[in-house]
Length: 215
Image (cartoon, rainbow, N blue to C red; front, side, top):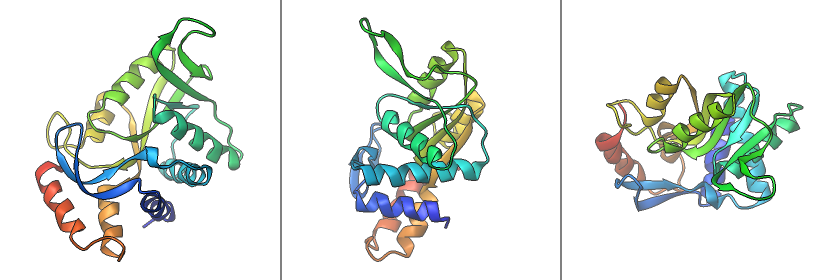
């Protein structure tokens, strides 16, 4: 397993961003694990998280011109990624959106840098793909294009249109490069070798994947 993958899972467990149990998702599915990026709530945690995203992006070999954080969770995530790239001498502009139009001050729905060129969006997970679709429309309305979407965890669950994962469906629909720090396969591989994770976790995840997993 790549060092950045292991570092991310260690961080997610320590921060309780990755937990195991029984969780009802927005989709209505009852999952044996849950990922909550809001649990990364200290400067040190966000620093490590940003570096994990950065390394996953670098590993993909992607070329892009700016970073975009969809409101709301994407805002601190994209900021952390931008700082991580700056540590390596790569200074990318960062942009965000508002969900509500501001009618005073600077106004509008765009925050941060003007959007231009090929944009990489940063978020926590993809479920129904709403954030991706909204990001595509928002970025294109600003005269730029979304080239890739990077999430922390790819749950590798079936999307809306067949046996492929939600992330793969969206990548094909919009011509995007899909990137994740870890996949469900990575989490299972880590769990198999880590005594902190109960031995019943992997069988429950495998049963869940048999029902909802991508082909």
